[in-house]
Length: 196
Image (cartoon, rainbow, N blue to C red; front, side, top):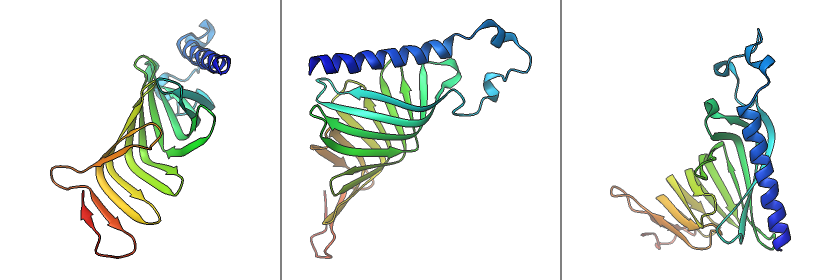
């Protein structure tokens, strides 16, 4: 298991280093040549296509396997923009935890902060989690979702303003706001509706 983890981490470092070097350094004939597009004229996705990255929580018990159709280096900063984003979360034993789909993501290479923008949808077993944004620290154990939370299951619906969870989505806390409490509704139409 250690060899596999070391191999994966080495691969990630090589990929990130390659991305960084290719974005930072260009041959002299490309920098000054006539007819070369200025950075402001580049369309999103001009730099890399079909990207795959892997991120881990603190003890490598959960991994996020991120796939994206395109990646951009934002104005030569150390921030990568990926779009669209598909993430498969797996345990260390490679069991599927959930799938996440979103419009785009920003990954700060210096801080390891990942901001995912939506609409974001997470499918875990028979549950569907929807939010506007998710933030997570690479190597961290918890994620935060904001911007209107909607959880749909065969039996109930939960609505709130924010969600905090461990990376496995096994311990989830949904919160309301000062103006509106989180709300739990049974789907069978009974009188069991209640504010949380």
